[in-house]
Image 1 (cartoon, helix red, strand yellow):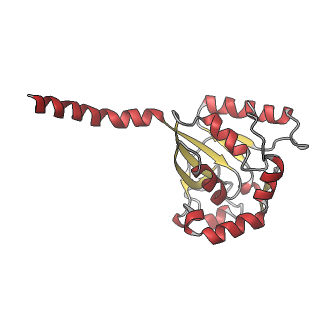
Image 2: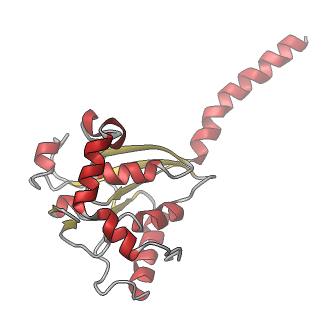
Length: 202
């Protein structure tokens, strides 16, 4: 009888566990220039379960990197961030995102130029849209930058994962990644404008 009760409870727990997990699992989409860098940065955040490099916002089905990087498909390079909403929320991720980018650059990000590399937040809920738009207003009003925030706030569309060699690029190719990141000027900008800034723009 005890064994029957044990296995019954175990069966119920196994059935419920995926539902409990999915209830706290949320998704956000951020574009901040080269996805190698934003993928590596988001992956360091506690509560982030997965980060996938990919493309969104264009007019071609299943776009290839060679075309996206030329700016011919209309897509942005972005990352899909899957996170545990009980450990880190969307506003926390947005707070981190600002500190990964130059939000005032309307024509690209650092050494990568073109719309495909410009910063963008693709929202998948009204709440994400509201929080992002409020954060943009707060950042503009703070006077932190001489230029206005150029980061676009757009509705999420179909997400296309990038080619496998782009996934976890910083781990697979650490030397090339560090050289690229240093040469591109991202960290110099971050250190100049964001170091020590813990203010939450909301």
